[in-house]
Length: 80
Image (cartoon, rainbow, N blue to C red):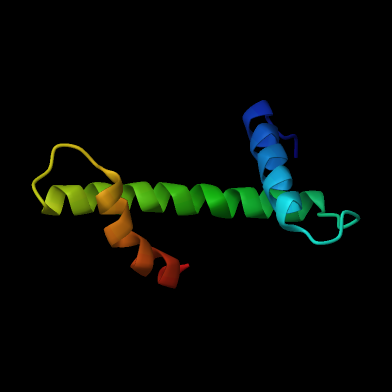
């Protein structure tokens, strides 16, 4: 399966984020693990956006703000 440029860019970003938190600089992540982690993060971000929009709608707001994200984040983290 060929990887598109946007997906490669996401995987590179995920790789950099992971390596920022590794204690050992020699730690490696396989391509499959990067692909899976990138997909999981994408799903997480989309779900956070959807839940924040629904929260704003429930509050009769025309715009989503960080406050709506803060309200949905605890349950979102428990769901993941």
